[in-house]
Length: 375
Ligand code: ADP
Ligand code: MG
Image 1 (tube, rainbow, N blue to C red):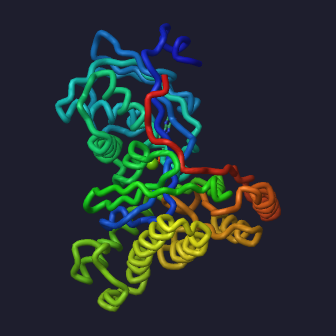
Image 2: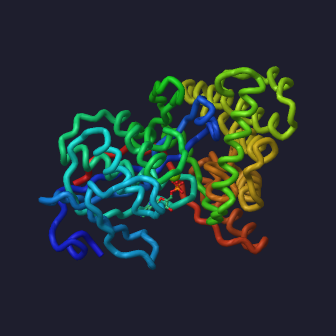
């Protein structure tokens, strides 16, 4: 179904927003810490045409087959806190813009995407940002990418009800091709860091285990509380401000390990950003592997499929690898020589088959462009 078939007319334009891959800095965002994401070339597009009324009609080719093909609501009827569904991510953006006092009118919207959903590559922010950008352009709202990122985050937090940080939307909207962004989630400061992997003959291999565990949602809240508890025990505002020697002030062994992950992970972001600046890309590999060890042993958010993908990728030639995203499934990223892609892919696929795991989906990623109008 294209826009014409769905809505009986042509769209006024098409806007694209990429998924993102966080090179390093996992679970640091809600601890006021640093992250280092880059955009990937998988995008979500929003084809949009304005209407004469205040009705929002949206359709997504990736919506569950059981869902209504076109979901509609009047803008004045949008209220947060309802039962969240895929359409809440789109309605939330309209609601957040409207609530911020921006004039937004009715639109027909068709969403298409090749960003893997629920895999830790941020399909949710890609959807929000593609639509957000379209609404900003069509209704001439004077919003900077950073302000738009905050509105899209508000859509996800307040309308959908997911307490996620600001990294995903910022990466999708602010990244530029051939760069990663070093993003300080406390100050909001963004620095574009040159990351010319392809000239170096390198790429990041994304191994989507296809595992999606519900556990990720409850564990997210649980880990978040542990971090807050640790910060309180240490006497700092957030774990961003703590050092390893502070850990002795944390009474509980499990909480101490959770905090240790955040503290060491924040240091890893600083190290990796420095390596990128000096173009020592290959040396990033072992730091990714150390991050995986920390996510597995200290933060305890890995699973058998993620561990296998990391181990096999490394033994087949990757410089290093780690799980990304919320955990218990989703993707692994491995830093590899582009020429080794086939070999590593084959090894990982074979290892998954021999363990009886679902075949992984594997693709190479390079730092790609951020959100933009494409038609
Ligand atoms: P991630 O952002 O890592 O992919 P999330 O759980 O944050 O995972 O967001 C996934 C949810 O976002 C999906 O379950 C769905 O509700 C919504 N979503 C994302 N992309 C699309 C799309 N193209 N069409 C419909 N819904 C989508
Ligand atoms: Mg998301």
